Length: 96
Image 1: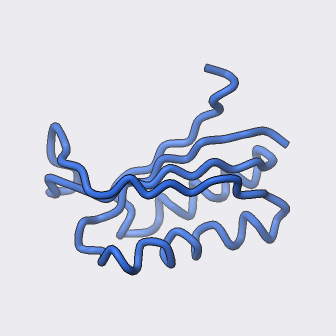
Image 2: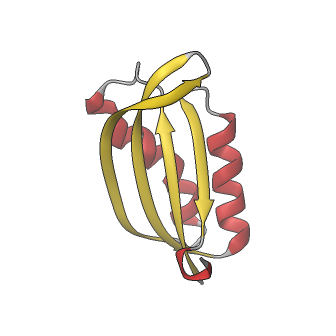
């Protein structure tokens, strides 16, 4: 297993109370496939330098996960499909 860091930017229309549930729904299939979530850090709302999908701000979440590469690829695919996710980025901190 490798360590990954997934940064997710959610639509500001998502209520702050529903952020954890939304992230959990995306992580459930990865955990079922054997991934281990080591940390979830909700950074809150931040203003963008430029608009993304006609939004000027978004809710930032950083998830640290230990998983196989194909599990992380599937997680990225699921995040890209969701309309409430404005942007997501996955990288390996040990490779940087």
